[in-house]
Amino acid sequence: MEPRILLSHKRIELIIHRFALQLAENHGPMTKCALLGLQPRGVELSRRLFEKINLLYPQNKLKYGELDNSFFRDDILRGDLIMPKPNSMDFGTEGLNIILVDDVLYTGRSVRAGIDALMNYGRPDSVELMVLIDRRYHRELPISADYTGAVVDSRSTGEHVKVNWENNNNSVWLLGKKE
Image 1 (cartoon, one colour):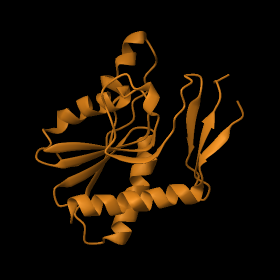
Image 2 (cartoon, helix red, strand yellow):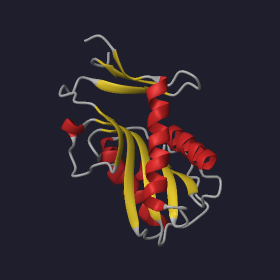
Image 3 (tube, one colour):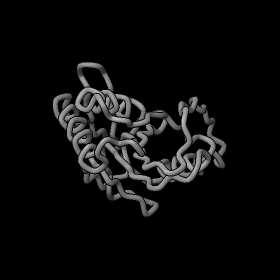
C-alpha cells in the first residue's frame, strides 16, 4: 500500500482550534481543569493546544502537565526496553477535570496505562480523552475518546499511522506494513 496523507498541516491546525473551542464550551474558564499530554507522542499535541487556548482565552485558569505511563504499561512484562520520560506536573489531580491528550488511539492500552499513572497524583473528578486520530477497529480495551480530530477506518493490522510534528508542516500519514 502506498502511503497516503490523512491530515494536512492546515487541517491539523483547524482541529487544534476546534479542540480549544470545545474545551472552552464544555469547561468555561477551566478553573478546575488540567490538560495532560501523554508522553511521548501526546505531548506535542497538548503543548500546541495549550498555546492555542492561552491565545484565544488569555484569562483561562487551565493547568498543564506532561505524564509518563512507561511503568504502567503491560508490555513492560514482555521485556521490551522502556525509556521513561520525565513527568512534568506541579499540581495534584484531586478534584480536577482532567483532559488526557494522546496522538493516536489504537488498542487503548497506552491510555489505560496513562489513567493508572494519573491516579498516583490524586483522584480527579473526571477524566476525558482527547486524540488527534482514532483507529476505531483495533480497540482491545473499552476505551473511547471524548474529543477526536479524525477517525481512520484502517482494518488491516499491518497499517500504521505516522504523526509528523514539524513546525510548519504538520501531517498525519497512513503507512503500509513496517519494514
